[in-house]
Image (cartoon, rainbow over all chains, first blue to last red; front, top):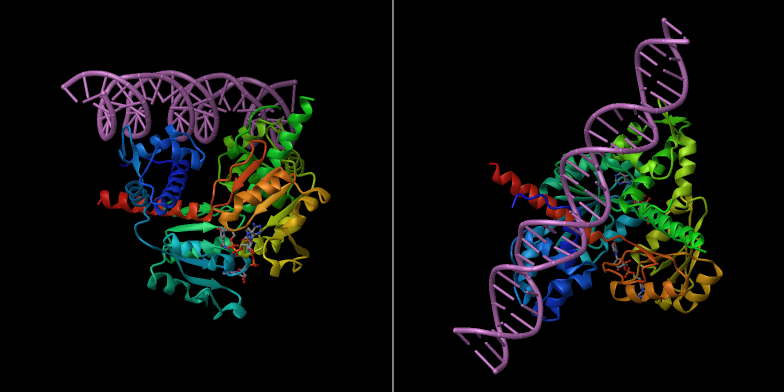
Length: 215
Length: 215
DNA sequence: ATCTTCTTGTGCTACCTTTCACAAGCGAGA
DNA sequence: TCTCGCTTGTGAAAGGTAGCACAAGAAGAT
Ligand SMILES: NC(=O)c1ccc[n+]([C@@H]2O[C@H](COP(=O)([O-])OP(=O)(O)OC[C@H]3O[C@@H](n4cnc5c(N)ncnc54)[C@H](O)[C@@H]3O)[C@@H](O)[C@H]2O)c1
Ligand SMILES: NC(=O)c1ccc[n+]([C@@H]2O[C@H](COP(=O)([O-])OP(=O)(O)OC[C@H]3O[C@@H](n4cnc5c(N)ncnc54)[C@H](O)[C@@H]3O)[C@@H](O)[C@H]2O)c1
């Protein structure tokens, strides 16, 4: 199973899992690749190909057992354990994330928050108390934190990420609009609102231009 | 120029533009594809290929004129105009977005905000007053809003998006963890934190498994 | 005027992802 | 047991995307 799985496949697996959890809650027993495809915005063949990289989970003529497939996907994605997360930068975005109920529900425990602003340190948000940066290393080790969410201003983001990685973080979710430079063994994903907005502008502008041409 | 440009190319163009704006502010006059590539996390060939889809902007032996290329990219991405944006759902994420200073700086004006919660209506955040949903259609038309940011709870997201589209929105930026079903002419981008976090878990788990195998 | 150095723009190639199409397999019903 | 209807799993084809390598061109030195 040393096959290289692409990011887009992994994202789709997350989508399938999300859907399966809903179906499971609704007590539905089986689901076909076609149904799964329709509700996640892809094609039936794509669903089957994605799953086939990891094994044969379905029954020909029937479909997939919802609950079994859910468990398989949870295993594949590494979601059978809980993950401890720290938030770096408790500003507007950071505190929104601390209050995000979905995390706990999905296996992520935000167990620490750090800020450089003295006036914020000691304050408690959603059951997590904001700590000084000086406590970062110790806390990462003690609480076995594997994921750091960067929500500092852009100027501080690279340093904050470096520090989290040195303290043992294996993965970084970055909200700051900057491409972080980190060692290749650290997993990084970006949440870049402006990038996405600009992408939307391109599409709208292009559609407008195309419409004019065919006039 | 009716060539189909891929999403990944558009995203990279945004990155180049971001870098060019910084260089321009630093009064740097020229930049090579190699420099641009290094600071945006790609390769020099990729930078040149991306730009070549739209024309020849560089000088052989020299590089690209920073300020010219910046303008070209702004034109390509449709950022020579300002864009009016509305936020739907003024909760934790919605209010963080309303207070996000980068938007204005980048050509996006958040001119309206809507919420279903009576107690929030009339309140003012970052210069924008929260309106009732009943005013949505009229406001979209009056203020020529082209982009709607969905920041409602997941159950309300599809309906909110539909309503924004019917009111004239050409693009949707969706923060709710759901795949929206919208007419194909509407541009949609997703900001799905849980999806990204799950992707990180996969990578970390996989790296862990690979390390064990080679023991 | 020629040579050297540097960097672009691009055809070609290699790789990767998605789609197609169908044999194989499963269960139900006769 | 055989047939029928349905859906999976997968090899092969198609469609894209990224990287390589180099001719073409630009500026400055000699
Ligand atoms: N506000 C938004 O809607 C939004 C949206 C998308 C992206 N972002 C990005 O997210 C990041 C945070 O944005 P925000 O609006 O929450 O900003 P903010 O100013 O509200 O919060 C930033 C917080 O980080 C803290 N901080 C500063 N330096 C730090 C350091 N070295 N270590 C730890 N904490 C530090 C500050 O004290 C502050 O509390 C920025 O990079 C921003 O570009 C914000
Ligand atoms: N909080 C986070 O950090 C976070 C992170 C990522 C994604 N999200 C997603 O963003 C969305 C909003 O999250 P939140 O944490 O800000 O939730 P929230 O509960 O704080 O805010 C939601 C707001 O939407 C309003 N609302 C409800 N129905 C509405 C409707 N039909 N039209 C307009 N407004 C309506 C509510 O009154 C509330 O003010 C959710 O879908 C959530 O899953 C949140």
